[in-house]
Image (cartoon, rainbow, N blue to C red; front, side, top):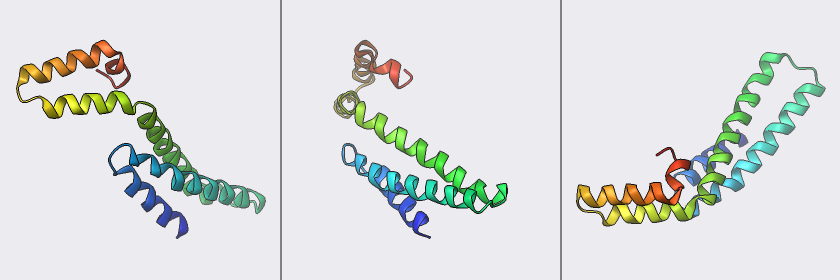
Length: 113
């Protein structure tokens, strides 16, 4: 139940706007530690493999959320500039200029543009 509550905190933290979204890293690390402890306990007790499935899935999901949050923190400046450009662009030509700037900055290649 504790893991579920912490995962809910991770989800809420991940839904916050940048840069406060980085707060999601704290409960993510806590969930990862709890999950690893649970896996180790199950291994010591020689629990069946099917019992270890859910903690393993949880660990994979938490790892994905953690890496996503870290990437967003690292790329925050580029994301912020692009979002600011788009919010000020009122025409399709201005939006296209934002895309050109994103591509020229090298930031576009990182986010798949």
